[in-house]
Amino acid sequence: MLVFIGLGLHGEGISLRGLREAREADDVYAELYTSMLPKLRLDELEQTIGKPIKVVDRETIEQHPNEILQAAKAGKVVFLVPGDPMVATTHVDLRLRATKAGIETKIIHAASIASAAAGLSGLQSYKFGRTATVPFPDNPSQVPYETLVENRERGLHTLLLLDIRAKEGRAMLASEAIEIMLGLEKKLQKNAFTSDTLVVVVARAGSDDAIVKADKVGRLQKLDFGSPPHVLIVPGKLHFVEVEALRVFAGAPEDAIG
Amino acid sequence: MLVFIGLGLHGEGISLRGLREAREADDVYAELYTSMLPKLRLDELEQTIGKPIKVVDRETIEQHPNEILQAAKAGKVVFLVPGDPMVATTHVDLRLRATKAGIETKIIHAASIASAAAGLSGLQSYKFGRTATVPFPDNPSQVPYETLVENRERGLHTLLLLDIRAKEGRAMLASEAIEIMLGLEKKLQKNAFTSDTLVVVVARAGSDDAIVKADKVGRLQKLDFGSPPHVLIVPGKLHFVEVEALRVFAGAPEDAIG
Image (tube, rainbow over all chains, first blue to last red; front, side):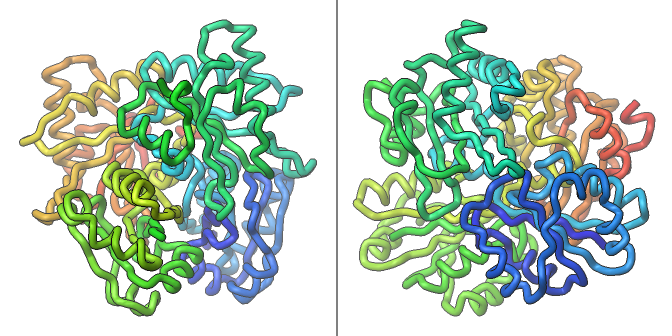
């Protein structure tokens, strides 16, 4: 059996059920390349679970998953994954391979950034349109800007996730993402992301030192939000309770939400 | 201090961090009216936390929140909430009241149905458009149908949550929701939800007896998915890996995905 267990957004984000399953497992693997878990202490988690955790990289999972699949055929294998397990395509692939090899699979859910970022900002989750990721400039894409334009036309909020390169130890910061989005604005000119646009930065969602700040892009760009992960939310049409929430929870100044 | 802690989708869905905060609290409240937690055993949770849990109803939270707010002024109060805490508007209101009363607030995230349902179906979460709720027929709304139409036009998947009335012990079943959506189709005729439309039913997401089934509406309507909660997903444009996932994880027959 192969059990995918979400680690949520925090070093202690695994659920009680996830912990129980991990304690019963014969082997415990983990990947830390699809997302960042700033407060995760692997040694502490190993102690809590009571067994060693084998950390695997993307190449192992995508090109040489046989070690894990063999172990899951012979016994109970747990695969620990940041956030909620199936958000990353790479894990859907692994689950497909396992099921086709006759291995039973199970998913233990945990917090995901989409729901958490919406909640922290006070914006209503059912008013979010499609989510997009802002890739690093050496792999440019218009998708995040086009997604934003589409969502705005319908009055919806847009969550922009920021790229991560675990191997290089790089995670995009809010200021970099803003620069990339302003560059796309300059190119595509739909007036969707200018220095006057209201944006919310959420840094380290799920941690005790999380920051949530709403302001005009031009001002946010100059601020330091500390270590990653960061995400951006570009609000669409705001309900008055959402305006109030941005003021109270995200320190939005009057001239940004007016 | 007022700490909102998500209970996730399962009786053991609280995170280790949530458990730690609850153990440190002076008072522990819980609401069970915004969502259903089929496997939640309150007595077991009280034992795990080590203190009694006061269950409050919607009226208390929305009209008489003073007991909680007073307690949160005097000490550390934990408020346990199904799913991820801020998805329900009612909790954003309570957090606003608390902050305005000078009370520090904190959110401990957990799994939410949006991310879980997408993950269980194998559909990619970034390809979901706006989410909508199907209300009971005595409180009719065209919003779920209109949301579906909008999402489909953009090729996006649509998650439809089903109404719940905790006080009456009622939660809408997939078959009822399908009937309501077929009724809206008959009225609005955009060809978005007919008996030939491919739909995924997810029942009891997060539980060991979760069911995920993809088929044409006409066939799903006749099936019994057991006790609630149920949700529907209406897929938009499918990537070939998603087609494969619906086949393997959701038993989609060829004539439904072809």
